[in-house]
Length: 292
Image (tube, rainbow, N blue to C red; front, side):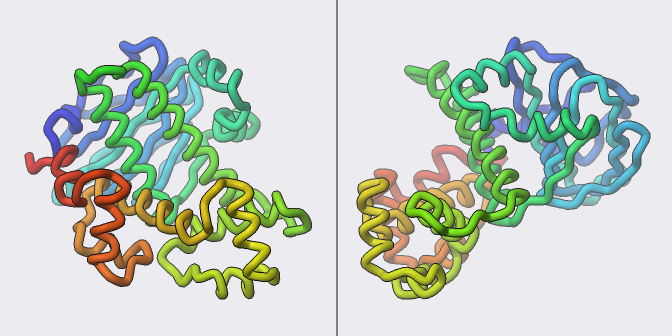
């Protein structure tokens, strides 16, 4: 991991930024932090470690791949039980004003926050492995951009944090909402998109999807070409490559990534990745991730 992507833990519990802050921590020992509150939202992503969380008087042990959304003014803290396993987590702090500014573009940015506010308690969601890898990739991309000195940095940070937040809200919404019946082309398209994203490592041939959704192969092909300008096969390849990219950024072994996301032949994956991103998977990884 690049050293500038990992943050040294601090007991500071207030924001220096006006809008948001995001950190990746990996610690084997941390100082005790007493129960505290914020005037902003905390999105806490637990990766691994032996800890106990205390939130609003409740005690529990988080599982890897969990998201906890803690609203403003809610007391919370964590206790590290032992350091045999590194305590790894992402912490994302975001102000209500910043979320409101994004909601001027779309209220979808506020789905998770409204879910938390409406329940008047903290919110917990468990991601699948694929979903959490996607999130990790977007977090590392954002942190890397924050620590960069590239042309267009501020604009790219805004794009990256917007993409990160919208992805979070979309994943939780699709996991917790009841799927509508496919009684229109728009709904059918969205249902197929959702199915592809949640079964990306499985057989997604046109024959299989036609049978799965009880429509003709021609109808699906025509629907995708008309809706996004891509044949469905190209869409699936692009989606698999995007998820592979996120998995590589999350630290997975490159040789295992291709098969995990539906590429049976590694050479096919290698050529497609290089064509899509202009470099090999290893060179791409090495531009973001380094050994400490």
